Amino acid sequence: MKRILVGLALLTLNFAFAQKKKPVAAPSNEPLKTAALQGLQDSYGQYKDIALQIWNNAELGYKEVKSSALLQETLRKEGFTMEAGVADIPTAFVATYGSGQPVIGILAEFDALPGLAQQAVPEKKGIAGQAGGHGCGHHLFGAASVAAGVSIKKLIEEKKLTGTIKVYGCPAEEGGSGKVYMVRAGLFNNVDVAIHWHPGDGNGVTMTSALANSSAKFRFYGLSAHAAGAPERGRSSLDAVESMNYMVNLMREHVPQETRIHYVITSGGKAPNVVPDYAEVYYYVRHPKRDQVKQIFERVVTAAKAAALGTETKMEYEIIGGTHDLLLNRTLGEAMQANLEKVGGVKYTPEEVEFAKKIQSSFTYTAPAISSADSIKPLKIDMDAGGGSTDVGDVSYALPTVGMRAATWAPGTPAHSWQAVACGGTEIGTKGMLVAAKTMALTAIDLFTKPALIEQSKVEFQKMKGDYKYEALLGNRKPALNYRD
Image (cartoon, rainbow, N blue to C red):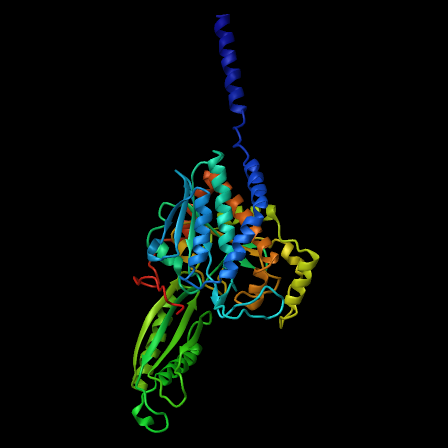
């Protein structure tokens, strides 16, 4: 009996001990992060060189042959499997390394803007014979994303991480909606999370939405005639364009105040004494809500039809691009914020401070302190849309997505400016690029090592998306590969 009682007592003590025993903590991923940070710092020179090569290429949307090839070759040498020319876009690609879950995607861009050729100097100074310039810093975008992807690849190769990393080569973000075609082609199916970033004049996680956007080129066809000798025989296509623009400008009073409408006349004739028989105007229509964009765009089309009717010309239009608003994901945003704070901002040398001051002296407004490039903005979630649009919005409707901005330009520098191009051609730009690469890599490590983070982000994604069934705003058209012509 005593033996039985002793046995029961021991069992009771063991059970009580088991109840008090703390759960085993998950192993820390800090050693992985330390290795990734050191590896990226060591390879800074390599990726700086890649970024500056793309800066010098300055290739426009869907024409980024050299830039895309450079990034592809870099990834191939690192052992990535390459799918090139995806989604019917010659310069788009998907590079893959590893196998199994999770699958994490990193977005890379590399297109330049027309009319912004600029030397890497702090005064406006163009480059003869060059069509474009990297006024939005996509040369840095592409290089940093590839760097982050390679960093994760090395950890998978060393069997410190398990899963799959994908780097997406995304052409023609600037008006060409490259990622929309990639989403439409199903290239993000079975990917768990997408990570992206964008150059800017400060450091912070992107927790502000973007404007949905529809764009089109409206073409009018009339009759040529001598503008003085036989004007009655002519029907001016330029008159049609100007009539359309006038009606759309009047319409601005009668659209929701968040609407943005911009246009540029891309062809308006060649000589004043020749009635132009062809003219073209290129329009963007933006609004925070995609359904409003559709409605407002149809009103613009109606104005174009009326202009053709009133000028006795013919009109046709071609949808060029269309992007969704950006779905935000707080779960992922908080994770990226912690990593950005760990990485820190951009520290300028005295020479870079002087360069930044000269850049700021060209502004017509008061710029933030130069020291702000070394600070991190606190996480602030703003469901309202910002002033721009991005085809990352369509990716965010396909899977949980998170992004950030890094200080690649002197504080206060606006995107799409000669000042942004100039900064992007210096270490002011490439140092910011490294901040982005490091932050994306650390965030990816969290996703590979914390399954609950992915699951929580997916729950939030479904809640944000609701029952909306994705449909590309540009319809079923093929990629507008010559939209910059």
